[in-house]
Image (cartoon, rainbow over all chains, first blue to last red; front, side):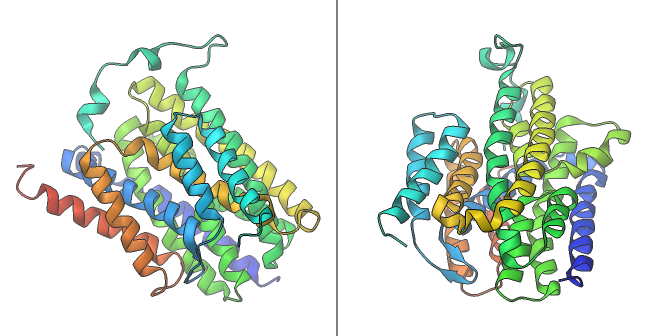
Length: 104
Length: 241
């Protein structure tokens, strides 16, 4: 996959440029409380969507499987105020055990 | 996110330092780095499984350094997609980093000289760990500890994962995809205080599920962000002025 190198490098350069653009927006704009509030709403939306996508999506299909166990176990762990690393490991364990038990 | 919440004086937790001189922001950052680093193993393994070579997989972690986009890139290739499709999915998923950059600039007010480095370390985890703190010093430590910590761990474990790719077999068997779900939920959780963020989260979750079968991978995440901003603006119409 030699020709893939160009796409790897182009995608990396674009990712960096995207990050940089955020920092180049004028401070005056960023100081506005409504801009802050919208940015906060966007972050909640993105993190929610990443969670859901990782839990149920396989490409363009919805495929409920053992990853849902990770979602449930992680929610319980977070409710119990477990440290972040414990939450992540509990998620991995729940999914691995689900698969071991024969779930998809 | 609520500005007033950020400007409150430090609570007793964030001003207290641990026995080893580690503040809560640093401890949290190191925990995040360890967790996400381990998850890097699955990226390395998946990259090689998708047909990239070890160096291409490692180059994505070193140079792109944004997990969601990297997974999208190899995911499209694994599904038989073109380099162009992989590029598009990765780039769309990276749009949120631009928003993080804007947020972090407002939050940390960095010097111009440091911005090129900060930009590279701007990812879900460094932004979340900075925003989760209440004291300005802790916000800075939160960003740098998570940013540098995740960078080192993510690259090291990507390399190990890529090398171990064949030996490890299916990353799903080890529950590494479940670890990703838990990791993102863990980042979202501290932000779900009050009615507004919960309403936004529910709307975004529903939008994501509705859009997944309809549009290419990566796009539902961007559309969910648009829905989140829309819900926020509708709820605050006329109230902010």
